[in-house]
Amino acid sequence: MVNMDSVGADIDASGKVLSKEELILRRERAGRCVTCGVKCYEKTFTLFNKRVPLTVPGQVLNGICLRCHPEEQLAASVTTELSDSSNNTSTRSISVGKMMAQKLKFSKKKSETAPCSEESDEPRGSSSSITDHSTSYLRRMTPRPSSLTEDLKDAANIMQQLENYQIDDEHQSKCTDEVNGTAISTSEKDALQALNQQDLSYADIVNIMAKNPQLAVMNEGLYALSLIHELDSNTAEETVNYGGFDVIINAMDVCAKDGIAQVNACKVIFIACLNGENVQRDIARAGAMKSLRNSIESFSDDEIVLEGCLLALSSLCIVEDNIVYMLEGDLIDQVIITMNGHLDCGGLQEHGCVILGLLARNVEARRRISKACGFNSIVISMAINHGDVEVQCQALTAVRAFCAIDDDSCKVLLATSGAVNAVLEAMKAHPDLNRVHEIGCDVIRLLSLGRNDDNYRLLGENGTYTVVVRSMWSHSQNIAIQERAVEALAVLSEHSNNIPVILDAGGIEAVLAAMHTFAESPHVQIKGCAMLSNFASAVDSIKVKIVDEGALDVIVMAMVLHSDNEEIQVRAVILLRKLCIKENVQRMITANISPVITVVEETIGDKLHEETSYIVAQLENAG
Image 1 (cartoon, one colour):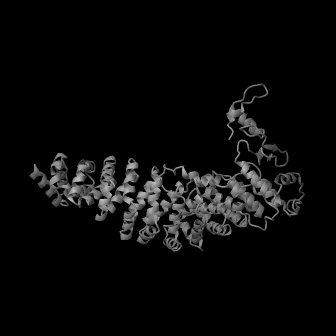
Image 2: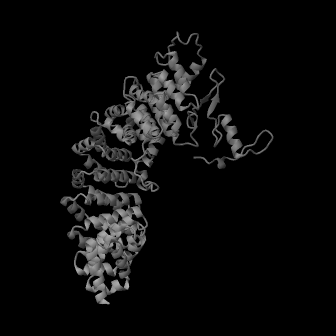
Image 3: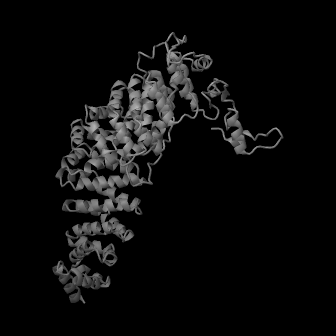
């Protein structure tokens, strides 16, 4: 893009140099590009008194300066190709993928080096959000329909004809456009001309579409709405109140054979859904799921349309009430089939994983996903798109959603589908991304809670413990990762067979470091004591190692800082009892264990009488 500072200043009639703000205002009023000053609009002095966007090959496209916005040249080249087509657009399906893939293709691997958002602790799915893939989709240009359709091949000439056309009786007359011998009503011409005006509001566009439900008007209206990327909540709510989203979904159905219209409709749905659950419910009620399902079926080989459909569905599924619409017909199957058929389309895979993760809340949806091998689809998506951070994050979030459900069958199916290895590979491939490691450690924690021997075996065979411990060291200041990792190790160490492996991976040192760094976190202290207690149930050499690594000071600190937390006191005393062997007694005396034990005896001694008595006796005998 051209920098305004590089094109020089301008002067007024008196020779005064204009400020940047004055120069911008002057150029806007003159219909010129505010950056470089090239002529982009012509003023007309007709009944409508509007500005007409210019198109100058290689310089300006529909009022947009190609020098300052070179990406628009892509759309220009597509428009030229499509305008030369001799097929009748009213009887054929316009496939966006076939017509535009080479010109307007996504940069699919853009996110390989771009981290997913670290600011929010919420996964996408808990609220509408914009990721790199969805941003790229919104920014992808689609040609103005009136510049492509055979009925309106030469939009500029038609607009001029409309301006010059004299209407005696608008309600009685009907003119015949001679451009292609196609009959176009006066009201339709007026509507198309109105939609080409500048600065139309969202409500204005929807009202024009509602009053003129013809295909060309609906198509042009969807295009106009898709350009409004910042829909404020008040406008969105007003659209709900006057049935505006019914009009939009109807437009999607009217333009069902037009892939460009479907893309624009998907953008409109997604942008609207950013305004909350009430809007999401209303769009679903208006029949969006059915329309999107039909679009998926009609354009099954068109990745651009399909990506838009899954993007829209992922936003609509955020509201749990909307899942009922997903259960109508075979929409869930279609989502999985779409994912399986377009494995290397990052945006499509991201949105598909979001949908499956959101559907995990519904029992029937889980059954259908399982039947359609949806778990395999998630795992395969992670393997194929291993460098795409957004796919990895959303796939991990989907896996976690299924693991969090109180349904061991889901955990077993995920593990047998290769989810454990996929999660570990994601953590290895993205060692510095907090989000990947936070969700990854949580998935491992949840899988270990399943109490399933096969899952334990799979967790043990894939180097899980080494990856978790490495994650703890790499993200030592991230409390979310530490909490999940410590709990995962606590659960996994309940099986004695896992203790030597976790020990070799440096599990004791990592857990003690977490307990020291996050001394004020009750969760870290509770799970840390639990994990160390499991280790202290093993041979004496491990008990000595725990003390050698500085456990006593960490335990005393936990008991002092959390003196009012009974669970921490109980777990700490039980751990100290296990560590209280001959080799460790002198060091326990040095660590000043006696005072904290005395406090416990005075407060909850009746629950821990045996443990506290034993520790006191050993320390007194050694003294």
